Amino acid sequence: MKGSISSGALYAGNIQAVAGTITTDASGDGTTSLTFRQKMKKVPAVVVPSIQEDDITGTLSVTSRTQNYVIVQVDGSSVTSSELSIGVIAFDDTYF
Image 1 (tube, rainbow, N blue to C red):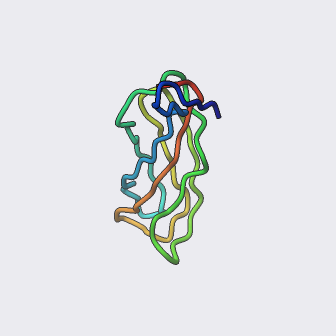
Image 2 (image 1 turned 180 degrees about the vertical axis):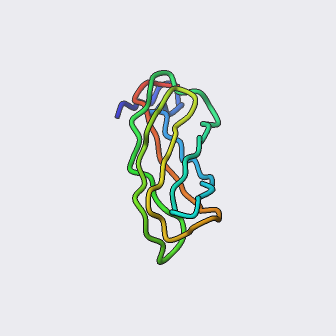
Image 3 (image 1 turned 90 degrees about the vertical axis):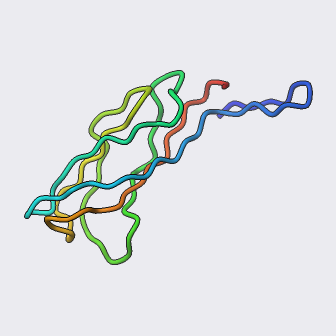
């Protein structure tokens, strides 16, 4: 990632952590869109999403990403017909 110090100000890549919930069906499957608080300058790289609760199984994947949001899908979660807390970290390497 890029970064610099200029005139006493630190400039670094745009890194954002986003959390939300996925409502799962009876099979433990579901999808959600997580919106970034600040639009990325380019489509970001996304670190593998994570489940925010202990002892929960399931496979999370990113199915789409734009400068404004990321769509996360869960398959086979042990949380069924309920809400699952998830999070992602996204970044682009352009300056703010």
